[in-house]
Length: 437
Image (cartoon, rainbow, N blue to C red; front, side, top):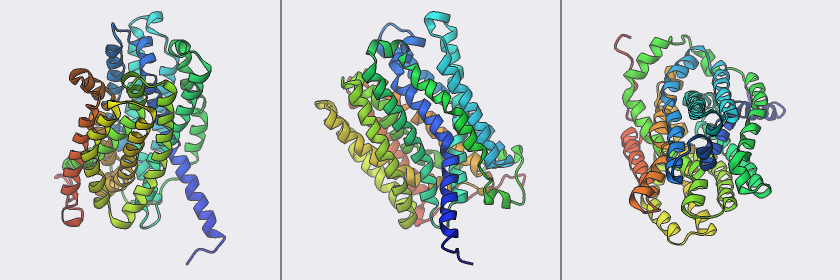
């Protein structure tokens, strides 16, 4: 029976509400991740004092990356939990763990106050965040894909990434306001904690939103939910799909962490632009990221995942280094904005497509685990490593455009994986069942 005029708006309203409730946890995750990157220099001085600025930044980004190494662990452990117990309950648990990590970092005393315990506590907070983040994105993406209307899976799943851009936008505004009303020395000394405190204050609201989630019809329709051991066995049997999924996701994670987490540091420490300029660019990037994600998802629903993935990856391969070389030759706000807008376009179009593709190629009965593991590996080994890799490449080569090589490498892996997965224009990688089954 077709929907009546009064039923249709109500249905649309309920789906929008479900999207908002599901993606609310992504806000907290990315809000804190971005702040950690933007205030890397201040955090380094507070918790990881070193003899020079580069060493301090490397220590800070090193801890940022170590936290990300917990993502694959969280993907397997929490992914198995969600595939067994349900999407709703699992997303509430991941939010609780993420919130704990945020509070730990926000309230941790400095190195000057408690000595070596300070970096240890901050590392603990990052490990908790990484453990939770390992399945947060996968759990939300799977939830959105399972409530999507027919033929619009790419569009629905793209809002997982779009929701993160709202966090970047809000964090950028807070950072901009702080830079305008506080002296730089005050922000470095203690003002950087204020946005983290704001993140702590919104945790109760996000918990309320998550608790009102309904379970997905697709999960409820499953006749049997796998045990943890069955989930692990199936994920292992499908290691090839997980590996290819990781390769497809790498360009998403590297471009995202470059245009959001690393951009403020790149603008201030490398290009020597003002904090306000770097923040304004990041704020505008968040807006365009939000727009391009659903555009990419919707386009891939119309023409297929492969054409969008290949086209964007090839463009990134050909233009990343030349664009950064043009920027660093004579840095300015306008040139930085132009390059970041280009990379934002690549990220949004590719990410909006990639999320739908990854949901579709992994086994349905262990969808959360395999999706989360593939993306967690991409984020841990490549994405969150981007700020560290970029800082290291510039330091070792003396070439301020050297991060372009990192982006080109990610694009190359994406092209190889997409061509492998979609040989002949359709998915060519078969789902496997464990030998014991």
